[in-house]
Image (cartoon, rainbow, N blue to C red; front, side, top):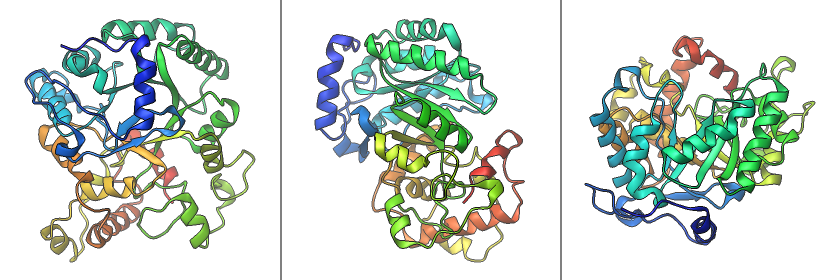
Length: 366
């Protein structure tokens, strides 16, 4: 078993990650060592952090009926490691995944990126960080973020971010970030806190509000601005990326500060996968090998600004399918057509395809 990652070993390792491309996985218990060349996984640098992350991360929004299946979950994590996945986003609150994840990832701690979200809040954030450090038997948590909403107490946000920054200064955390489900909140937080190293935010082929493009294809912000005639947003739903808003532009802030981006909700909380489009072109496209999960993930990764996306993993088959999205070329014409069919079906449903708790995602559609 390898020694846990310590604050002493963290600095040279981060420097190496900045200079190199990808991570080499070491011993994985019952799994053979895997590297990026043999697994086919690709890696990107998370903004200014210098942290190398796999383009496909291991999301932890586990289906409730899978929570108690430790054997199945262990197999999924190990298969992810075999496929070269290095970014593991781990939920403890209401999911209780710290224990199992720390056990399975322990032997390869130095080769994976652990991403956590603070839920204790306020003055207890440092206690939560110390709890995580002890649970994962490590001196460093790679990525720690908070969740904010428009109803969040601004004083509590201030305290949480200051505490995360203090933990970073002490070498307990490598990078600090934020998750928000509201674009205006993201802009406010970016404007207020230059300490933020990265963001988790919604982005998929349906919900791409930062890029008001009507055709389904991935484009960088620069390409969109240079090549496309942008519509004027409605006053009630201004897009603070390309139109004048009371707050600084989201995209400009991200670029100016080199903030890392992680795309969440790649399948719209599962709603996009539950659509059943009635289109004669669908069967031939699927017969040609185009699949919605892989096309959706390739679409996201077509945006060079996004370092990784973290789909939920509920079975070994899902891990393999999601991991396979990095294989081969970028989004094909067949996959783009497939996504257009599903995007049309989502539009025609009037948002009914989304689970109730994810209805807010429609505010992010282009």
